[in-house]
Image (cartoon, rainbow, N blue to C red; front, side, top):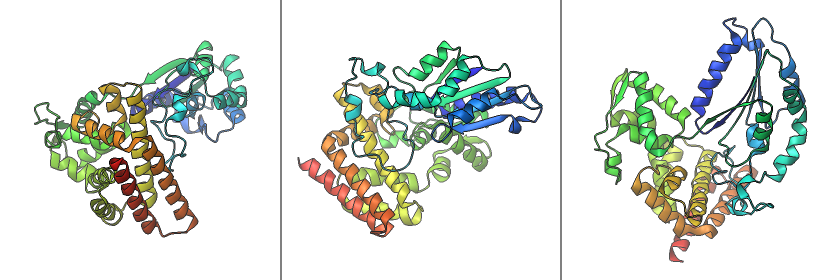
Length: 387
């Protein structure tokens, strides 16, 4: 059997994998010797193909999982392709949206596979051949990936060979609070919303502990599950208050991170340096973590600019913006992205990459390099505002 699991709901995919693991084990307790886990970024296709055709040992099935393989054959030019960065390193300066706006050779942007993806297909031919010749009855092969948009040549080919595709889409912003309440209820917790359903400003948002947790985790279902587990231990079950979420899930770090990003995008140097000190000293954030945080903020700004150019509506913008389900946060993010502009985003990426290089080469101490970066980013935002 062959399963294709893809999407942004990683928790749902992990639960599905757990079911497949149990089925492969069959209660024998021998899964460790009958499961092969590969990461497509460094796996050798021949080794994967050999694992697929190997018989199980003292268990009903052999389980072979290849993570991120579907991502290697994603279509080019599809909106949202940058939503799942594969590492915390600052992005390439050119990866700010121009590639996604490039027209495909056949004129159908959403259907055109990336040239590198087509070239990579040859390396994985041993696996494709094993699948198309017929998987052994005792083998379960699972290929995973992020959300698929447009055509994916690998998915098309494997579905013709009998693969079962199972998408696990990202939760919509308006679904997150209910999802958190339902997951909390499984753990014996109750989240009460005292905002009356209003989300027009920060004060109203802060009346709903589930809404606050949704914003802190940015809709990441794995992060949600982790924070709910911590809350269950902290509260012992029962009602969850805002103070509980703030104490267990946020502390000082996320709030300071929000404030740091807002201050930088608004060009306010003095508060930005103060929030930076909080992150580095009291919250214990690493300099590389901060670079990844800032790179993610500017990546989202680039995505917002792309969506605005394409005439996207509120729902699409909400998905691309942290806390976008709240009107005031979405409107503020859109205003900041517009003010910064594509030129400002590119300049900011350049500053982040140069800082990363200066730190790794030892040209500047980590803390000094990040302080200089914050000053540069504030200057870029202030200059963009004047323009």
